[in-house]
Length: 166
Image: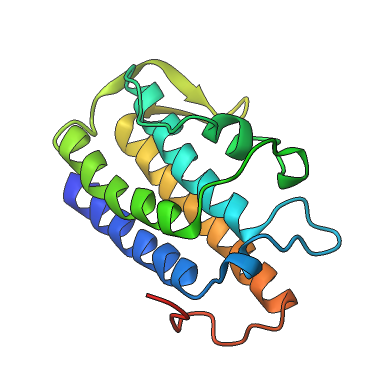
């Protein structure tokens, strides 16, 4: 797949994530429904952190990860264990909005590069190129958009894409 196509998909997916964020209040962002482990705020922070970790680390580079993000939004974390104040929705929006352009600037024209070692998903599946990792990161973001949508529906939010604040 051509670099521009993968980044176009990233832009579309991120546009939808930002739309979901814009239809979320601070109060809604921290609600964790019964049977769930995480909140909307956690999913948004996890999306940002995952892109930084997956793509940059595969390329052997350091991503732009704000202090405390790994502890708050990493794999197997939960708001129930947070120490300190999580980022506001305004801060998450800024980070999520800026990230795609920064990733494009760093990785456009490089997606055929192989990492130092494959990104092993399962015993049978390993991603060997940056393109494969970016494609996975895009899918992963969509997965978390689904979680955000589900949490909103549990809260009785029907209009998932209308902004509630600017």
